[in-house]
Length: 331
Ligand SMILES: NC(=O)c1ccc[n+]([C@@H]2O[C@H](COP(=O)([O-])OP(=O)(O)OC[C@H]3O[C@@H](n4cnc5c(N)ncnc54)[C@H](OP(=O)(O)O)[C@@H]3O)[C@@H](O)[C@H]2O)c1
Image 1 (cartoon, protein in one colour):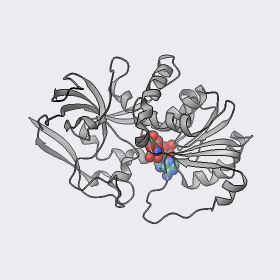
Image 2: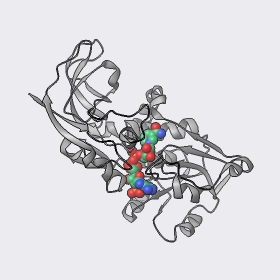
Image 3: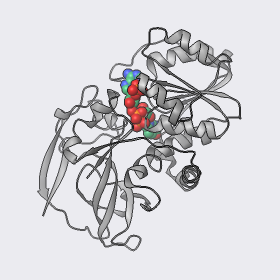
């Protein structure tokens, strides 16, 4: 039997496009000694993938010729390890391919598809949900009644961060790039208000949306959006740097306003986090997010593509904002 894999063929300058990848047919792998043979049923498309294939190489880079790294939900077909059995559904780093010969360390956690379908284990109960939960729980130091501004508000992380913030008694205000998503932020994702940051009157809209200023900034974009938000931060505000989606290329560091004085005189706290360094928090985050969903406080809007042949163009689709919900691929 044959496997289909999506291979990185050329590193990307800026946003990765379909031409950076190729589909390859290879013999189906066998179960590795001490490991697992997994059949993927859903694979993720994450904004963070851009950094893995970028021209600027780092410790997270994927080598040219390798299968594209991805989180996935898959079923164990064969197991040569004690922990997992055939039939188990798992969430892990199983990549853009049909079959994965995985080491047990590639598994992040078990998945209960009776509770939620595989795609939701890539979103709310995957890295997006964990990033939103960790950012708010471990770094925000929030108190009820505070105003939190969230960029990429309608996306995988932002849609969950908005609902978590609402659930905890904050007033979430969202920024997104389409009017249809503005509406969805308010009707589905718990936002008090949302604003299309592309509008010419963005500054006035932002002033009107945060009359008492901003206590917390959950930033997924950086760039012009962050520049606009910084001037509205209250004394003692906290900035949680989760992503930098608006910066297409870091090979030359983009220049912008200097913020050291704001940090000093307004006693701001600015911290970043990388979810993969906090995976131990999943044991607290997942039950919390699952409880919210069971109680009807967590909506997930999904955009599911069919088939691995959709994968090469999917990262560009995400960055163009053409996804109409959390993007994943069903296999
Ligand atoms: N720190 C961590 O460990 C961690 C973990 C997961 C994700 N993240 C980060 O969180 C952010 C969101 O990730 P996600 O997976 O949930 O993706 P997402 O928000 O579902 O998709 C990315 C969104 O970014 C927005 N965007 C693209 N280009 C932009 C630009 N130039 N200016 C402003 N917005 C732009 C688009 O939304 P609009 O249509 O609304 O413009 C697009 O839909 C990313 O920066 C990602 O790297 C960080």
